[in-house]
Image 1 (cartoon, rainbow, N blue to C red):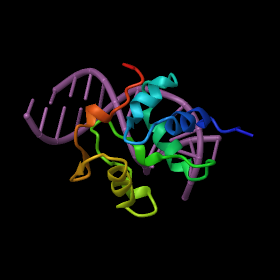
Image 2 (image 1 turned 30 degrees about the horizontal axis):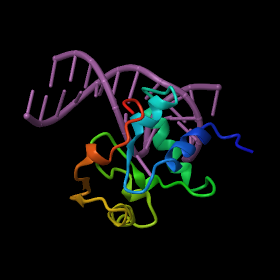
Image 3 (image 1 turned 135 degrees about the horizontal axis):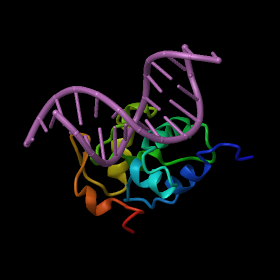
Image 4 (image 1 turned 90 degrees about the horizontal axis):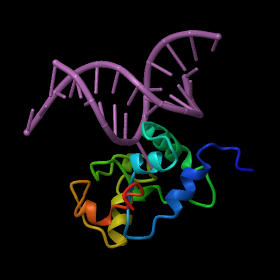
Length: 107
DNA sequence: TAGTTGACGGCCG
DNA sequence: CCGGCCGCCAACT
């Protein structure tokens, strides 16, 4: 069963409601990996192997930018998906990022 | 086994 | 203000 170390990471990502996003650093810090934001990125890379599904499109970098959109089935899927959730994305950048951002550290 | 990469973040120059 | 470097943990080659 969950022999994967990112298991908690996926759980946090799945906990993100539609229309909301979070950052790698927020997740990392939430798990105690404050400086290991890269690990969260690696976890996302493997996310597609995780079950049942991980809304990785709701995870962006600290700039509110769709840095990982190129890793999805289609590079446009991430933006289209976020827009479908009510977000506004221009130039691969989330508008009102701080408004939709869930900062677990501040929350 | 060792070296490098990776969907990042923070700090220094 | 902008650019570059180091640090984090795990996986890939």
